[in-house]
Length: 345
Image (cartoon, rainbow, N blue to C red; front, side, top):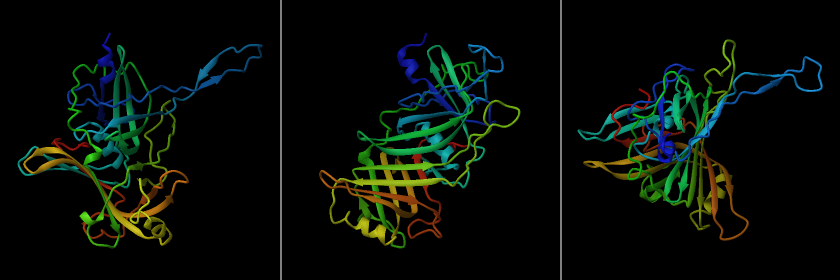
C-alpha cells in the first residue's frame, strides 16, 4: 500500500488525443500537484424498476453515466503542469525561445473555440489509479491566497475508472519544483487606463487588496446513441472573462469608478506576476492582457472601513489599443518559463 505522502501527491495530466480514450499520463514529467485531488467520482443515476406490482422494490437499473465534474486547486507554479489546463481552456499556445537561454515565452490568445482540446487526468487512490480518460477544462479562476496566487480549474470528464487499460501506474511520474517557482502576490502589478489612452506605464499602476480573474467556457453535457458516456462537450454560449478588483481604501483614486461606470468609460489593463530569474535577463512571469474592459458592477460596503469593489467584463476590442499591438481578444496570456515545447503540441 502506498504511503500517505505518496497517495496525497501522485497525480498526472496529459493532453488527450481521442475523446473517451485515455492518453498515457503515467510517464515522466507529467506530474501535477493540486492542493486537492478533485474529488473525482463516478455518477451513474439509478432507475427504479416498478413494472412488477409488489409491496417492495424488485430491482433497479442504471441510466447513462453522467459527466464527472470536478475542480483542481493550486498555488500556481510557473513550471507546473497546471499551465496545460490553462492552455487547454484558452485553446492556444505558441512558444518562442528567448535568445540562447533556457527561458521560453508561451503566448495564449483566447481562441474562439477549444473544440478538440481535452486532457486525461489520473490520481493515486490508495492502491488504485483512478483515471478520467477525457476531460474538458471549463473554467479557470485566479485570486490571492495568503501571499500566493491561487488558481482553480473546473473540468468536465466523461467518466471515472480504476481499471483503465492505458494508465495503470503513476510510479514513474516526475514533478516540477513547486516551492521556489510558485507565483507570489508580492510580484503582482496591475496597470489600467482608458481604452483609448496612451500605452500602459508606471503611472497607471493600481493596488487592489484582492482580485479575482474568471475565464469560463460554457460547455454542454450531451449523450448520444452508441455510448453511455457523454460525447465531447462543446461551447453552448459565448465564453466570459471577468476581472474583479477590491480596493481596501475609498480614496480619491478609487472614487472615480462609480462615475466611470455611469459614464460607460472603457478601459484596457494588464496584470503581470513576476517571479525569479531564469537566465540572462529573463524572469519567470505570468501576464494577462485585456485590450478592452467594461465596468459591469461597482460596490461600496455598508459598514467598517470603506473600500471599493469593481467588476470588469473583458470583451473583444474593435482594434488593438495603443501599447497592445495585435491584441483584440478578451484576454491574452503570456507565460515565461522553462518548458521548451508547447502545452498543446
